[in-house]
Image (cartoon, rainbow, N blue to C red):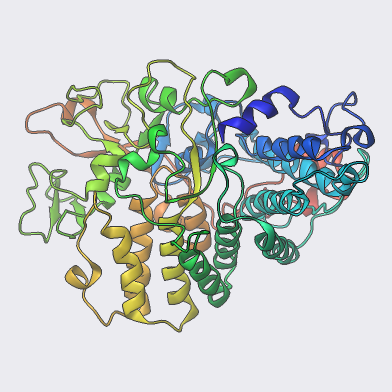
Length: 539
């Protein structure tokens, strides 16, 4: 939705006055008087646009979705200046900048939503527009508030819950997570009643009914409400547009799904929208810069290893033979990354493959794991800090795999349906990995299906920021958050290449602490209802 960002760039956050108690999100004292500003539907639209604007990244130009993968076993970020490395290493604490910025971003969006909800009726007291969209605007605000709260409770657990416009001096204690979840689900259910299934072109990118239902199903899944999640996600799968056609489908081309030329396609349910030449306003991001120019974001060997052969067999490292091995009869340990799941080549630039610019990629000393990221990279870009492609937050493949997981975890499921949901993702035309029944078999129990779904999520959503939440809700931190490995550039430049994992980062994971982030110290210092004993355990 490039259009609304242009409006937001002009009004910024100045339209919000005293909109939240938290010190991190206090708006300027010289902001517009709400009683004056909220006088028309046009201004209400601008105010809603300001809530969307708050969904932009915690740090200008940064894309937090991929940052989250740097904090997981999928990636390594060699630069401490980008504030993600410490989370992977387990050395983060209450003064960590990234947690502070993420907390601030969430409450900034919540405060703007609360202000709009408090003053929306006022916009219609003087004039009644020919086309009244008040219910839709209210629903957009409810959706966005739910979205911000869903991220806060995922990372911090119990958080202060503000549901009304408050004065700058107000503060609240942490609200139990279960209570926040209940509020979120209620807001999304209400929003889904009035949000449209689709928009006209000029409003593309706004929250839709599908987005509200998909987020609702995700939150239900993440909070163990499996039967409800399965039902809600089925609504998304079956959702039809005004012409009676199914609203969502898998985009046939996996790599192209993430390029600006194909944004707003049939698979995208909700995303953060960007535009070129607006870096100073935070509406342009740096993804190309970090992934291609600077090599800051480095895929780990553990992620690369997780992609099966194209025949559907896993590959593992044998420390004794110093070779990769697989039960696939066609597997060649001399060239272990040949003929793998096509999503590997469409997500990671492996040594000896096309670098995207018509040359063969041979890593140098600046490539800390010997690999680069291909997903998200638009090779037509030539300028640093001027990326415009939208960052997808929820897409249809996620809905399919979340429903599959919800069915399995509910304990009551049709095994054939679960396989069909997974197969739809595997059988994307540009991927065409073997169906579950053709490689893993049929009549699979919950444990087998669970393992298949978890693997599929990792390779399907690499670099999209979902891995950190999957690790958290599956409680697999100690198992996967071990030291990060890559490949020495000197080894993989050889012919044939030598793929011998070497440690690039020492990591630690404390299961009694690291599933949640610390409440920022500045919040503890300024909120009288949150003191040191109220901090998350271990911080």
